[in-house]
Each structure stands twice: as structure tokens, then as C-alpha cells.
Length: 318
Image 1 (tube, rainbow, N blue to C red):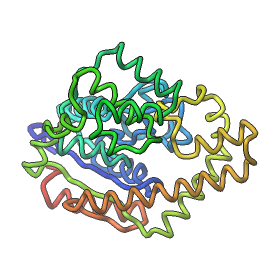
Image 2 (cartoon, one colour):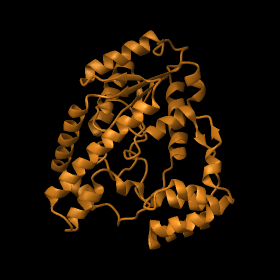
Image 3 (cartoon, rainbow, N blue to C red):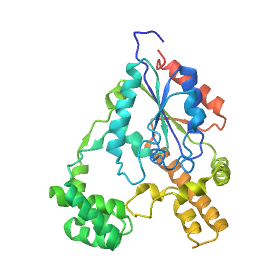
Image 4 (spheres, one colour):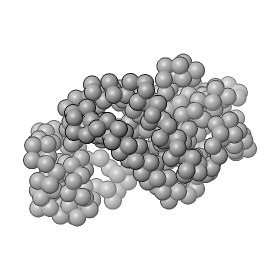
């Protein structure tokens, strides 16, 4: 790379346990690049084990950004992540480095490339009132209120989806306008212009399903051996509005720690939930990332070779 050029951006998406982090690290080492997190659970500093975030040794091998930057009790929206990720990517490119964005949260990649709906300003007093309502009375009560105040959004949301119900309620109460109406207008994302210019390499790892499921199971067993129970035990009391407390394995392991089920049953249920989530992710990426390069390989070095060949051919390393 010459000093006059600014390396472009490489996106590596895929389901949980597909090996994204390992691929990103090897690629970052090969390119002299830096890694930006695009996984909603790896944002939380209290969940390094359960979210399979890169460990200290991996982070020492290449710079990592947006890992462990939020507490589980802090609200962290897609828009907030997109702003931070956009700034991190711009900083990396300004320093003549390759920015490698990797994770499994599909909406994060959509926010980078396709933009987000315009975000309305929310009155903090109203936000607090809505959150208290959903926490104290339950998601169903919040949904009943939403059905009166914003029937369009109520029709779209499940009565058990407390987080999205609260969001819809706070928007309609703060702005007098349905969240559905706000969502009809989108703004460009941080990478929209660069992507239109062909400056973004986009890759999805979609390995064979049976292999992926085995990886999910083995990884959860390893988590259980390396202190994940202590991590879960240290989390704050359950709050249905906290996204982090819905992380894979958290509800099941919390139930076991509370004596509500046997630990082996909790582990079995957590593994099942992880495999089901991986299946949903694979379906989402296949449907939503049709113009991305799909890689169905299993070996890290082979995947890196494929990506490196593609980005070199397309001029993304110059």
C-alpha cells in the first residue's frame, strides 16, 4: 500500500460460531488492518465469555474496536452503534489501514450500508415512564397501551416483545407520530457512498449447517469450562428491557443458578437456542445479502485466501 492511498473496507458477516473472528484476525494480520465489532452482544463488557468476544491475546495481535464498550444496563441502539462504527472506520482509513468489520448482527451491517430510519428525539421523562410501565406491568400491558395509541405498530409487534413495544410507545408519546411513519424515511449509512463506488468488500460465511451446529455445541461446552457461570451470576437482576440479558445462554443459566431447573437441562436448552439462532441468522443473511460474496468453506486459512484474492482482484488493498 502506498502512503497516498486509503484502504477500503471489508465486511465479514455470518452466523454465530462460523469462525468470523478468527478469519478477521488472520486477515487483519495479513493486511496490517484493524477490526471493528459488528456483534450486538460483544459490545457488553460483562459478557466476554458468553458472547465469545476476542480475548486479550487476540486483541494484542491486531487492534480491535467496539468490544466491551457498554454496560449491560446501558441502552445501545443500532443508530448508536452505526455512529461509533462509522467514526472508527473513518479513523482507521485516515491512518492508512484496512478496516475489517465483523460480526453476526445483520441489522448493524444494514445500518452501515443502507442507512437507518430517521431517529426521533425522545423525551427522557416519557422514556422513563414507558420503561417503568413495561417493567412493572409487563409487555402485555404495554402492548395494550400501544394498541390504543399506535394500532399500526401494535399490529406488527408480538405482545411479549417488551423492548420493541417500549420503543414504539416512547416514540408515539414523544412525537405524536407512529414509529411506522418514522421508519418510512431512511438516511444514508456511514458506508453508503463508499459502497456505491465499489469500495466495500462484502463477505458472508455460511458453512455447512451440521458442521456449524457441532461448533455451537462444542463452543458452549468450552464456555462452561472457562467460567461462564460466574459471568452470568454477576449480571444484574433480570429486566425485560435489557437486551444483554436475552443473550444466548443467559436465561437458561440464570434459571439453573436460581434453582429453577437442573444445570444439565439448562445447558441442553441453551445449546438448542444457540443452534436455532444460528439457523435464523443463516436464513437472514441468505435473504438479505444477495449481492455479497458467500463463502461456504470451513477452514480459516482457506477463507482468508478467498477473501484476500477477491479484494486484491477488486483493488481493495491498493
